Length: 262
Image 1 (cartoon, rainbow, N blue to C red):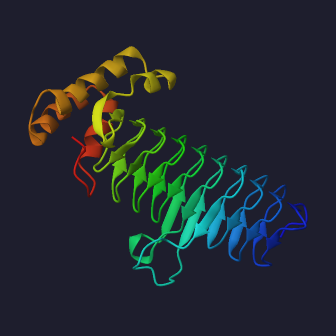
Image 2: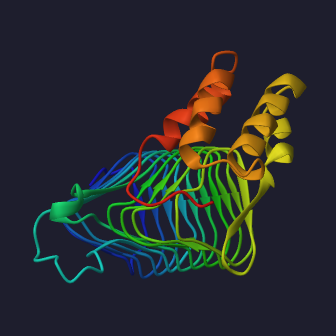
């Protein structure tokens, strides 16, 4: 442990943990062995961090956060798996982040600059990108892939193995049982349904009118025109010749293990 770390007297830090310069550890925190915490990260009161876990710099765990716990998977037999967290993330009260599983890739990974609000749960083998916002009670089952700039509203979640594409917006209470393409808004209680594109979010991130118009046209091709999926993909391939954003959408449609949310 770095001597420059500030550790509250009531905290319990395993001698095998590595705390970088400027790390602050609050009261009644428990940090286990095989945990690495990057510079200037703040661990608030009553948090628990177990390993193997790697945490980057300038993160903030507000309080009562449980990080690096065993995956909630009956197939897990104690094999070595990891949780890897990037930089500048904020985790609010009672967030839970589980490690990966041996047959699921072995790693749960959180990127940079994410905000996870109270009671968010990220299960084993999930991959979360950068600049995402997960509102209260967001729940990701195992093996979910969330790309950059995704917003998930309160009490929403995703089925295992689903993918949520970049710049998507998941409305309050919507449950995603299939893949959500980039730029798409999903709404509705219980089983979520596509409701258009996230045009406001795209504007805030600097997408100009021409780019948004191309994405809207692609959405209509995929969801409004009533085309079979393969025929819609053929038309999207033509549109992608003049739009990198449509190309990204088409590339997304070519992968995945779950059906498209459609």
